[in-house]
Image (cartoon, rainbow, N blue to C red; front, side):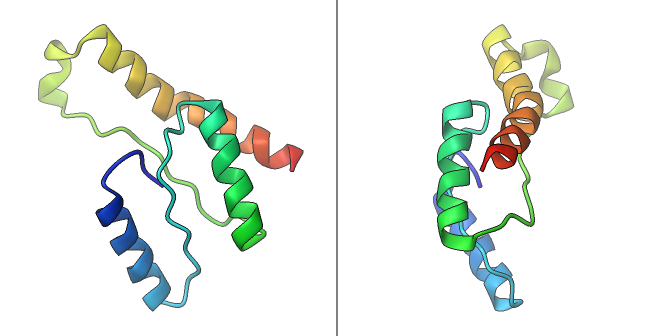
Length: 93
């Protein structure tokens, strides 16, 4: 799952499938609970269960002083809030 770079996401899914793993590449912003709900719904319809979840906004440590407050809030939302939104939604099925 990713918010952008759909071509890269699809390539990773193809590589997973070549190894015998089912993959469902979905573009989404996991910092938004509505997006997580959509992703879970699509995943449950297509795969019936979840095996892996990975979300992170990359951060260059050298850029820290140049981070805007908006960029910080976005990184925090992706790296923290998404770890609450997904299990909450999955437990409700």
